[in-house]
Image (cartoon, rainbow, N blue to C red; front, side):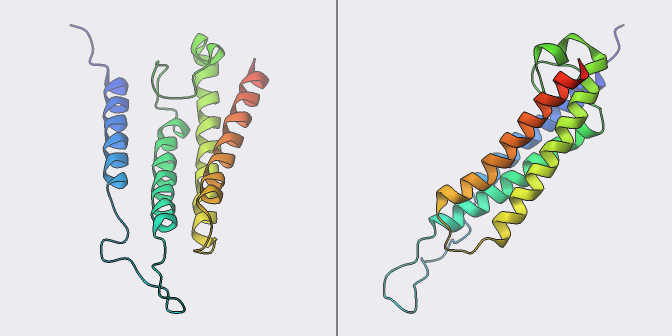
Amino acid sequence: MDAIPVPEIVVGLFMILVVAGIRAVWSISPFPSARPRDVRQSRPVSTDSHQTRARLIAWCVILATASVPLILRVVPPNGIYGFRTAMTQSSREIWYPANAFAGWALLVAASVSALLLVVLPGIAQRWLLWTLVLVPALGAFVASAAYVRYLT
């Protein structure tokens, strides 16, 4: 009888949990009541920026959570989850260090993004909020790719 592939099952369940979390967070409205009004003017304050900020902070939490199994080196080589390149999938000696580094880079990027999203004033534009998430994530990807090249 073949052994039960426990790491693959754990990774699969973790991915299901992440997807369910994303779906749940995306359906949350931070302002379920009537739109707040600006006291200086009689027009409604846009809640678009607040909703985007809440969703992006939740996304940062999900990314940080997804990076933990990579850091702990419990994700085996697979075609779904991890820092997958031709070089990392060809060798287990490269897969685990590369994914641990990518996990740390992703954790730092998510933490920096979440901190900036919390500290930034409430009147920030949506493009700036997205930039605060995408630029550190891109930096984590570039750093991880450079580390993989260093390993080979």
